[in-house]
Length: 268
Image (tube, rainbow, N blue to C red; front, side, top):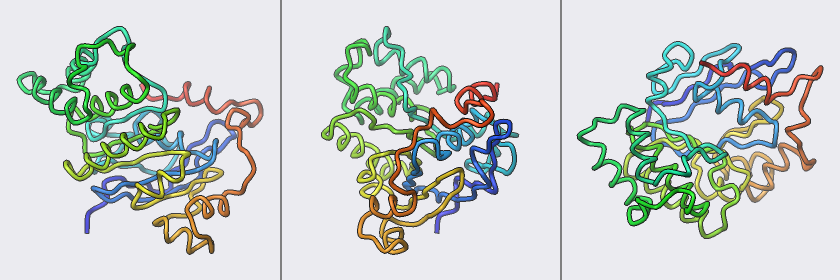
């Protein structure tokens, strides 16, 4: 049985009087593919920002690969790669140049940079376009490049925050093929969020559902369906979270906007 590589214990995140994450606890085993699901404003993004050292928990502990994210940030950051929901590439540089910059930032051995960059760009089928400017890349190609870039420093964990948002079905399927290949080849732990529940049902080995800042269910897709007396993950999800539309931009308390508060409280 694999040891947990991500551990959250009684984690709380408050923004003034607003509690965005309310005492959550969960574990992710090394080598697992773990989906973290929830409606808009449920606490997913806040949790990922805490896991990736962008926000400091108000209370509780979070560890990655044995490193506390608040007291051992540098080691925690070396443990993971991340693909953000919003693109974070330098469009006026080539794909190869984007990879080189990231290799330098993460201290990849200079003698091994070229070999590692080629290996990863071939893995995601972008080596033939290595010299092309990123601004000429399609949305799917950019996502694949971001995944390759996030893996340069051999992280133990890959965080994917809505990685297939806005991609067509064929590109989404191709991207998940790459992710599963990484999981098999490198034993990498995958932690992802998505609003495409069929992705979570097909890809994730374990799932946690968060709503109103609390984890309300965990288990496999089949276990969640059995727990709710439904047949699919989507039906189980709707049974647990309801069918009303959520609007995260309207979440406020005494005039406090969650996103503004997140920006103000990010770790330096």
